View 1 (cartoon, rainbow over the protein chains, first blue to last red):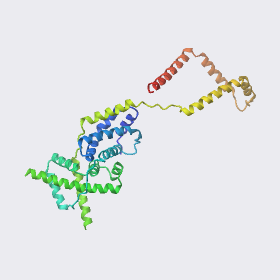
View 2: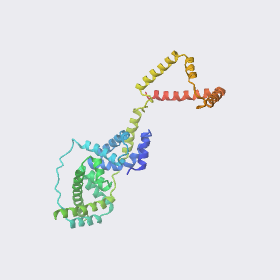
View 3: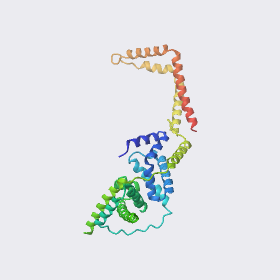
View 4: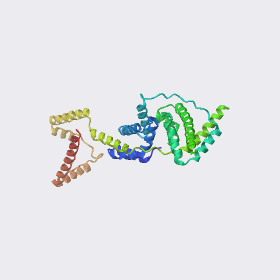
Length: 191
Length: 143
């Protein structure tokens, strides 16, 4: 569902009131930066990617007809810009094995995580996300934090539905492993 | 059995992550991001002139000019009295269509226009000239 305020702001920018674009940047800059970071894994590059993406979005605003939700449209630009940035300088990202997780083990892990303070949980989650593969972290953020549907993620990434589901499944498992590893370190440091 | 276990794992995992992400906050974008982006946007805005779409496109413009020229030429070739004669020849049955009302109406409009003070004409002409000049200078500024 498109935000009525977004539509109003976009119309103003299109009619020549360019200064209003700052309000759009204000609203989306943090999420855009987080998404860019999840792919490029580097703050400096993420800033560059976010800046480029916002500029590209401004230039393409004339083509935006409001068919898609504005955030979905913007995140697609961010995704494409970030992927272009890492293309070429990509290091080997061989698939990791994902051992099956036992339900009881998962409950214990959840309990341990709940014992931590909210701030520490946030820190651990951010760290775990930064360790995921580019696409996986991006899709996890859209699905769990932005609560985008699989169809919307398809639109953002241009990947097929089954591909999105596979990446989501893989990312979820990997995130859990990373969280467990980080949690173990955190608990060890307490002892 | 394994498939069932996997699905159960996924469901527990999914719900757990959903809850975990409730606390998540996106990273703060650097202060410079908005300013630098807006600088690029303003630079682009000032570099690219506002494009005015002409009311009449170039191709049609030539046809309109040719058409007007043809009309002027025809009007010079035809004697006005000839047209008047044609109109008089058309005999309208007054019992079916009563044109006397229309004629008197046109006469009164003509008299009213004739009696209007000349200042009104001058004001209308002046206003129109200003609008034309404004549009002309607007276009000139964007060349």
